[in-house]
Length: 130
Image (tube, rainbow, N blue to C red; front, side):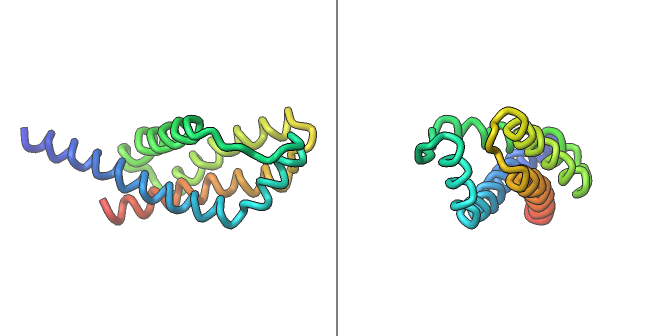
């Protein structure tokens, strides 16, 4: 019984730690690249970007759940976490590039690579701290 409690406690700890790390790292990335993304959105929509909080919450719940389910809970490697992030962000960015006439390929590439960096760094730090 105590083994299962330990495993559950470890899983909860990993989710909390990975969520905090991911939110901090992605917040820094978005802050540093704020003008790039704002200009991209203005160029496409012709209006200033307005964030929908519910969409942000759903997005991060899915990212944190996916990372924990597919990578962290299975003790996968850091390169696999990088690949996971590259795929997740790459699907989003390549879809934007394919469907939005003015979506810059440089932004798609930069953000796709960031997905890999975010997921691998979050995984590494979670392994170290959990």
